[in-house]
Amino acid sequence: MSRYIIKRILWMIPVILLVAFTIFTILYFVPGDPTALLLGNGATQAQKEALREQLGLNDSYLVRLGRFFKETFLEFDLGTSYQYKTSVSKELMTWLSITFQLTLLTFLFEALIGIPMGVTAAVHQNTIVDRVCTVISVIGASLPNFWLALMLVIVFSVNLNVLPSHGVTTWTGWILPVAAGCVMDMGGIARQTRSQMLEVINSDFITTARSKGLPENTIRYRHALPNAILPVVTTLGTRFGRALGGTVVIETVFSIPGVGTYLNDAISARDYPVICGSVVVLSILLCVIVLLTDLAYALIDPRIKAEYEKSGKRKRKVKEADA
Image (tube, rainbow, N blue to C red; front, side, top):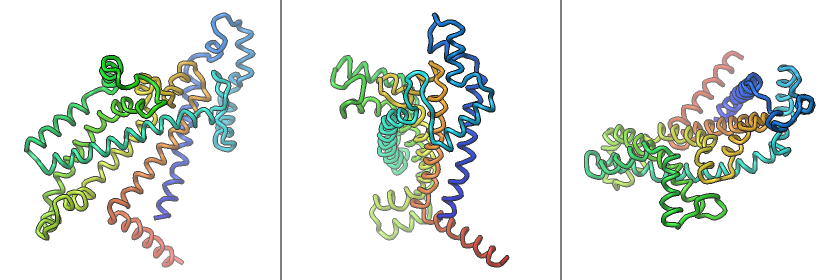
């Protein structure tokens, strides 16, 4: 198992380097001058050239690329923001903590509501319970999160005045952003859980468990669900990574100071260090999430862990035989 983890971590290195190379190259060749936005319309050409020289924007592509890779991966320095004149690393950690909390809360509610809903719909197939769960999940998966966010603000903040419309300074401020973020994916998770459970609940081992007189909840959640949830875990991991870098709409509607807002402002201001640093950090986090998702398979299904261990033993035996 440890060999598999080390192998996956080593595979993360070229992926992250490729992401860093791609985002830097895109920003280099995209037309636009950040000095014009920084100095304003009244700046002279001489002032713009002086600022470009100060920021190192007049250097060649290879020189700037080498400096970016050296500072990012050898010195672990993401640079200084053009717009805010602050360290990108420190600012990004502050903004990222808010986004991570929002993403984690959204992820938990998606799983805690979507999975039981899918299980309930599957075990009550073709009944009124199944139809109600299916309708709710389809409606949830069809609602755009930006529209839902605006509707929640209008209803609960403007009309009823029971929840704040912006900010997350109190625990009540998290309710509307989390609700707006989790409803769409919750419906998709419920539908996928239902389809996977329907394939499992008619299996022979489920029939055997029922013949032994095991409680129905034990059969559903200890025998059927672990065998049906692996594709759902993949979906959850993918959506967690996507939500971590894609909460810009929710953060904008509710004025949440997260990395989505930070990155969106940087793109508007052509703040290259912030854009490159944010994309690199998010790519690292996404690779870690994918790795943790794969490792979760072994915890859920012991057969996968056994397969990892057998693969390692086979490789060791081949090496011993060659020696």
